[in-house]
Each structure stands twice: as structure tokens, then as C-alpha cells.
Amino acid sequence: MTDLRLGQRLFGAGEFAVMAIVNRTPDSFFDRGATYATDAAYAAIDQAVADGADLVDIGGVKAGYGEPVSEDEELRRTVDFVAGIRERHPSLVISVDTYRSGVARRVAEAGADLLNDTWAGSDPDLVHAAAEYGTGLVCSHVGGLSPRTDPHRMAYDDVVADVIRTTTGLAERAVAAGVRRDGILIDPTHDFGKNTLQSLELTRRLDELAATGWPVLVAVSNKDFIGETLELPPGRRGNGTLAALSISAWLGARVFRVHDVPAARQALDLIAVLRGTAQPAGTRRSLA
Image (tube, rainbow, N blue to C red; front, side, top):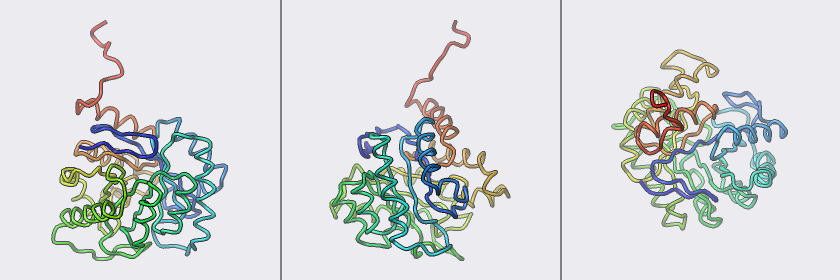
């Protein structure tokens, strides 16, 4: 494993990073707009930091289909907010979930450290924005879908092989474009361009992605593949999320995009100890 450098933080091999989700959207599938208002969004950031988040991921457009969101509206929701976070939390790693290069440049100017391109380079200029401003970049896999498109009858000879080929290809393209190699992550992008069986296959074989050497980000929090597997709505998928997150961590994922920061932090801290990359906080039982 290689070191991962994002903003002022250096995440060493074996170190898990928690990415808190704060959506500046009125129609998020999970929180239904709970952090759309500016004051609520800042409060969520402050709480995430207090709960142990290493990064925050800001989204100005709902990932799935819904009301159209213009680039101007996405800018309105994100740019000033990113600048405000940077002022409140100078050393916090700020990620912005966007597929538009115009938004990428503006949020980078405002202080973003990472561009989370969840639509796999649909705007080919976004990688140049990351290179220009020295930000990190997330390289994802969506099976060729256009932004905000839900999958329908997606088929792969081998979904894991397809994910590896696509994400590592995007990562190498990013390096060639001038993006820092130590700022690039790959994301299998569960549920995007995939059905539930394909997302489950990716989870059980995540070690194959980790074996590429690129740091792996997983965004499994409350996803539909967990809901369909357990027949549960978004608000009741927390335990399933922790199971998928824990398996992903054991198999080599490095960064975890989550809604519930305290639960994820505790699970990952225990997994780090079990894997031998961290020490227990205390070992008094039967020794005192």
C-alpha cells in the first residue's frame, strides 16, 4: 500500500479514513434535505469533525434522477459553503462530489482538497481541473452511464474485472494529465451502473481492487444493494452498512464515505486493531 496525501493530511498504509457525507440538496435519497439549509449543513460539518471524520464530502446535486440542477445552481450550493468550511476547519480534508469541470475549478479555488467524480470522467476536462489546482481525484466506475442515470439490465462478463480496468485506466490517465499519484483513489461505485448482485460481488472481491495498489474508496452507506439484500428501507440499513463497510476494510479499502460517522469510526478502529495496524486503547481486563 502507498501513502495517500489529501490536503494537509497524510494517510499511511493501513490507516482508515472516514469521509462524512453532507449533501447540499433538497432531495437526497437518505436525509431528504436535512442539510440543504446552510446553518444545518455547517452544524453537520461541525458534528462530523467532533465525531472523528477525517474528510467531508459535499454534494450539490443528487446522484440519481430528479429535478434538473443547473451548473449555476450547483455552484450556489457548494462554492461559498466550501470556503466557509475551510475558514471554520482549516486542516479538514474537503471533498466535493461533482462531475462538472466548471464546478470542480470553482470549489478548488474555494479550498476543496479532493474532487469526487462519481460519474467516471463524463466531463473529460475535470481531470485537468484536478491537475491545475493540485487536488486529489476519485476515479469511479458507472458502466458507461451518463450522469444521474439509474442502471437498467447492466451486464458484465466479470464486473470486478470491468471495474478494475476502468478505474485504473482513469487513474493512469489522471497521472498523465498531471494529477498527483498520491492523491488518486479508485472507487468501485456500488449501485452506480450495477444491480444488487453485482454490488455484492464487488464487495466480496474487494481485495482484487486493493491489489492494484491504488487506494480504494468505498461508498456503501445505506445503498440500495444493502436494502434489497435485507429488504429494508434507507433509514434501517445501518447495521447492514456496518457489515459491508467492515468486510471492505478487512479486504483492503482505505477511505469510507458514510452517513453515520461515530459507528463507522468505532468499527474501523476495531478492524485496524484486529488487522494489527493499530493498538487497543486499553488492555486492563484480567491484567490489573
